[in-house]
Image (cartoon, rainbow, N blue to C red):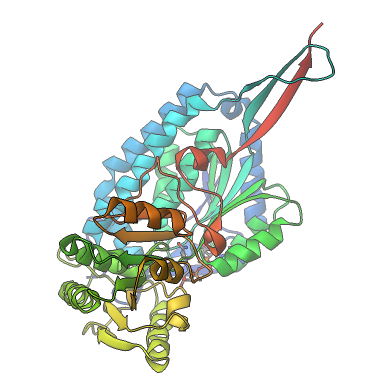
Length: 490
Ligand code: NDP
């Protein structure tokens, strides 16, 4: 299947100041369907000059009273309208995501599209809640009235990756617009289509021209131009830790505000008292969902030695049972990975795992697919914490399994990486759950559940998994700046 007949592609242009424009360069970027490796369309490749135009447009709208002085309630209504439009296009958006990214369309309809709609609805509520505090200052004996104002940060440059293209774009756009910022968004060059469709919906909702600008293009050209632009006040990034570090260094030049949501190597810890009927499928899906291309995927399975063999056998059985294939098919659970380059990278990690001493208990191949970029769910057992596959983010459907002896060893193993994004804990003992949740260095700890992502729950990482938080009140606040106002009273 190349492209569903009922699917219309979005405008493949740059969105600048409310208009769809061609890039100033002739070059176009191919969009490839990961399920068959075929080129199905092209997108524009923005240059530094195009990015500059987009930033100027975002700045003009930020300064314009139509946006700046808009009643908070009216801003909220606009965001609510975007949520409704996303819901109205749910099927089409899910199909687009499947075509561009490879993920199963029925799962995109269940996860990605609702997540995008819900963040707009949630952030619509924050528009009316931007508030400061009154302060009891002691001063110099005179009387003062002092308070803080919370104000929008300004122009945001947002860069999002290819694993959740629509949802990641929505998280950043909704939070920034709710706070009163304006934005230039650069989607990943391999998955720009749903961001472009979102741009169309945002215009249709009546969001003022220039509040959201979209520049498609490569990270090295368009992305680089955005993060180094002197008139961008904040960079909001989701992607690899390597690029995140580069952005932080670039931002040091003019001290741009930065929020970084980066990689992970999250543990799934199964304690001896866990309910295995829940823990086994939970452990499997926390790594194999979205073909493992999730920053907080539970990619390291840590199991108490007494139940290690049972859990390993159970998770392997789930892995083998997941239908692999084209994401347009309703029964597919494992779609292709994003690109041939990524497939080779994952296969290379599997080879490294084997050469460093792990044993493949299931997977390791392409699931019998004759085209496309497929990797079957793979488990590397008896992995030692020193191994690369235990330490480095693979970003594919590859799980390492390691036994532990007691809770202290579980904590030590869980924390033995440079990352700290998420953790999944499985235990029926409340004290054990709380002890682990407190001791694990991660931004989110899921206990007897996995993959619960909610607009009200701040998301982000410890250590090299990032800086700052997305969504929730903290995520919203990251798009604001605090100002102290001090007035001397006569
Ligand atoms: P990158 O971090 O390179 O890409 C993420 C985004 O950053 C894309 O929009 C990319 O653009 C952009 N980008 C790349 N270089 C620059 C730059 N110099 N300046 C500004 N923006 C830039 O991830 P990859 O796509 O290369 O994936 C590699 C690995 O990163 C994965 O295997 C995985 O380990 C990790 N990753 C983690 C993600 C997460 O959610 N934490 C998401 C994606 C990847 P473009 O794609 O157009 O080059």
